[in-house]
Image (cartoon, rainbow, N blue to C red; front, top):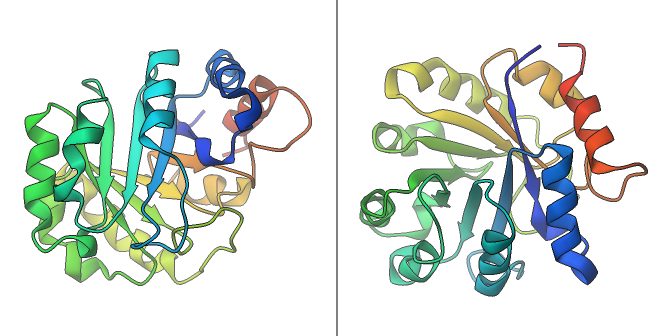
Length: 221
C-alpha cells in the first residue's frame, strides 16, 4: 500500500457543527486539517477566519496546514503563526509578496514548516530557487479561491518538473484542488506525498468519514 497523506479541506466542512466534523475526521483517520485563509483581494473570495483556525487548533492534536491566500503575507503572518504549534505548516503564494523569502523566514523562525503554494498559472521556473528553503510545495490543480472547480490538465507537466527535483531540494509535494481517486492513483506512485480532499472525494458523501478515508487508502495503486 502506498504511503501518502490525506488532509481535509475544512472550508468544505459543515459549519453548523464544526467540532463534530473535526472529531469525526480525526476518528476516521485524517492526517491533517487544511485551513484556507482568503482576504478577498489576492483571491476574489473569503473562506476561513483566524478564529476558525484557533478553534480547530484547540480541537485536535493533528497537524494544521494553513494556506494563506492573502496579499503581502509578511504584514499579517504573525497573527497566524502565534496560533499554531510546532509541526504545523504555513503556505504562502510567492507572487503575493515582494520578498517571499522574508515571510518564509518568519515561518522557519517560529519552528513551523515553511511552504509555498503554486497557482496553475505560476511557472516552475519562477519558484525554482525558492524550492531550496521550503519543506512543502502545494500544487494548485485549480485556480485558488473556490471549491468544486475543474482540474486544469496542464498542471501535470509542472508536477513532473517538481517531482524531478524534490529529493535533491528536500521538499514534499502536496496536491490541492479537484482531487479525485484517479489523481491519487496516478500521482501517489510517482511521488506526490499528500492530497487535500474537498467535495470531490470527502465532503458531502454518504457514509462515515472513516469509511471514505479507508476506501481512499485502499485504492488499487
